[in-house]
Every structure is written in structure tokens, then in C-alpha cells.
Image (tube, rainbow, N blue to C red):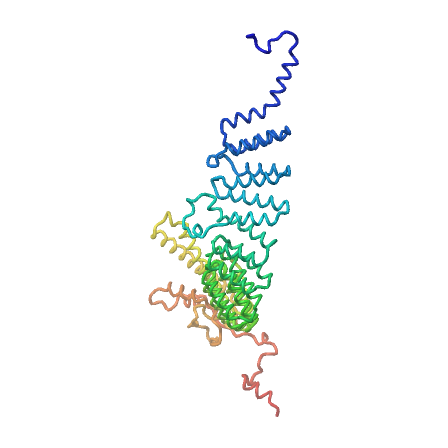
Length: 567
């Protein structure tokens, strides 16, 4: 009697194998039971336990497992979403066509003290969706109406976080949106409007909800009602939540009334610009200007573009100024864009100044204002490093080749050297700021300046030497002193200096040469040229060909005028 059941006489192998197989079949269920004993509030393990019984095709065990799960799991201590157990329990009855039991499960689920309002709102939504799946539309609307019902006392309460979750579920936007969608699809326009207005009163509406409400009214041809909805929305929400509301409001209003209510539209745009931050105003300004162009005054549109170009972020100003210039050219002509270009050069970022200057200079060049174009290039060159940005310098170079002379070209080169030196000094100062003091910086700048002066002096000496060795390389009909003064001692019989000769010397070279003279010296350059015995020669008449004047023939404009008059 005390012997083990397995210790029986005879062949018990089959019995042992059957018991082992039974144990293996129950292995998953037994492991799940062990885990649930360790943590009975693990929602995932309860779902696994139900799945095991469903695979075994044991409805009684499935219902027993669900009932045990919803009774055991504490929503406050649950590991997972406890409402999913109730929803799955009701779905099991629904799949077996027992709607009454499913409704009873959902009713009991709505009374559970869940940890968050989202869990309870999901239960209500699943309840309504079950009724919709079985075409019980009225019951679905009643379920959602019951879910969002709230007393005025609770609605006026400032602090609802301490209330039970059942008294706070009316603040769920998900429930209200589903309720509004059902009313819009199945109810009447008045009932739908009542739902949306209740959402606005309870302050549970979102910007997208208000846009949907206004769109529904617009489809029903209630345009003014839709505009009132937009008005409520922009007053309820601050930026950036009101961004989509403002854009939809402005676009819908202008599309509806166009120029019929232009003053009201202007007031709306001004209100929008007051509430919209500067970095987001570009779109509003463009809509405002388009309205004035199409239905208002062009002068107002230009004023709006001017405001926009000054108030938007610096990164957007360049493109906005280009648009402003194109509009001004279209309506008033190119001559009216000068003031816009001048304002653009002052307001756009430094990286875009050169592009504005190039466009401005090309405009002046087209109008024949060569001196103005040159002045614009000079201004823009102060913002353009020759070592990094060649666009402006190339444009200026082509301009001088086409419209300038030798003096203006030399001036351009001088400015280019000066700007390059300025940017080089700035780069040196930035690189050595952490390791050098102010005295070292001054020494470096002085050294760079001295090197430039020495280089220019060396180039001038080479030029003087070349002229001394080969006088025929000099330009012009007469050879004069490079210092700008005529050589005092010339060979006898040499022609006098041509007073109309153009001085090709650079101003910087004159200053450098004057700085190297000794006291009492009349001119180093003059003495150098005098020592080289350079003389002046008249240009042979053969050079002029048929254009040379005959001996004794009168010359000048008056003589040519007399020749053309008929006798």
C-alpha cells in the first residue's frame, strides 16, 4: 500500500509514456501558471493563457481564464493595458454571436477604476465600434453620448484631476471626435453643430476639429458660420497652434469674397500679422500682397512688399526683395526699382549684398548710368573677398573693359588690393586672437602694409627701367616725366610738352615717390629721367595717314563747320 503508483508489476511503459505526453501537452499552461503566480497582474501573460486554451478549443476554459483575469488584475498595479482584457473578453462573446453578453461585459468594463483616462476612452470607443459592426447606428451614438455626458458642475470645476476617471472621460478628444464623426455621417446638420459647439464650450476642441467643423459648414453653404468658427479658433489658440487656422481662414475668406469685402479682409490680415511671429510672417505677407494686386491697389501691394522685406527673417529677405523688384518692374518700370535696390543693399545679409549689387549695377548699365554702376560696384566690393568670391570682381572687370578707361581700371585694381588686404588682416586677427596680443597684431599689419608698398615700389622701378632702355614702348605721341612734371632740361630744338597729354601715373605711386624724396630735392624722378637723357619727339605725320592736317590748313571744329556749309 505504501508503494509508489508507478511501481507496479508487469509492463508499465505505455502508462509512463502516456503520463509524460500529458505532462508535455500541459507544459505551456503550467509555465504560464508559474509566471502568473509570480506576477498575477501581468496582462500579457493572461492573454497568452487565453490563447493556449483557444488553441485547445476549450471555450469553458477561455471564459474562465478571462473571468479570472479581469477579477485578478488590479488596474493600478497592472503590467500592461488592463482594458485590453475587458475588450478581448467582450470580443470573444461577440465572435460567438452573443451580443447581450458582450454589452454586459462592456458595461462592467466602463465602471472599472482605470489608471488613466485613455484606457476608459478606449473601452467606450470599442463599445461603439462593436455596435457599428452590427449596424446598430443609433445604439452607437447613444453609447458615445453617454460616454461624454457631464454635469455643469463638473464641467465648471477647475481641477478635475482628483475626480474618478469616469467623471473625467468627457475631456477625451478621441471620444468627442468619434461622436462628431458619427453625427456628421448619420445625424443631421443641427445635431452635428450641437456636438461641435459643445466641444468648443467645454474647450476640448483641437485646431483640426475646428477646421473640420468649418469645412462641414462650408459644404452646407453656411459661409458666415464657418468664418465665425475660424474666428473662435484663432481666439482660442495661440501661435503656433493657430497657424493652420489662420492660413485656412485667410485663404477661404479671400476666395469667397475676393474684392467684395476688401476692408474686412485687410483687417483680418492685419490681425494675423499682429499675432504671427516675425519668422512666420512671410506666407501671410505674400497672401496679403496678392489680395491687393488682384482686388485692391497696386500702391498698397508695394507697401506690403516693403514691410515684408524689412520684417521677415534676414535669411528670407533676399528672395523677398527679388520678388519685390520684379513686381515693381512689372507695375512701374525699372526706374522705380532704384530705391528698392538701395534698401536691399542695407537690409539683406552680407553674403547676399554682392548679388544685389551685381543686379543693381547691371540695371544702371542698361539705363546708361555708367558712373552710378561704377559706384555700386565700389560699394559692393567692400563686402566681397577677392580670394573667395569672384563673381562681383569678374563683373566689375568686364564692366571696366567695356565702359572704362585706364584710370578707372587702375582704380579698380587698387580697390581690389585694398579689400584683399582688409580681409587678410581680418583673417589673421581671427586666427591669432587666442595666441597673440594687440602689439603683435599691430606689428603684423604693419609688416603686411610694408610688403605691399615694397612690392609696388619694385614694380615702379622695373617700369622706369624698361622705359629707359626702350623709349618706344611708351604710349602716346610725346614722352613726359612719370612724376607728372615735365623734365626741366631738354635737348635744344626739342618740341614743347603736349599740354593735352593724359597722365597715366597712379596716385599711389606719386605718394610713394614723394615720400622717398630727400629734403631740398626737387624730385627724384625728375633727376633720374634727366640723367637718362630722355627727350621728346614729335610723332611722324605718316602715322596719321590721311587724317593729318595739311600745312597752312585751318584746324578745329569751327573750320570743319565752315567747310560743311554750302557756298
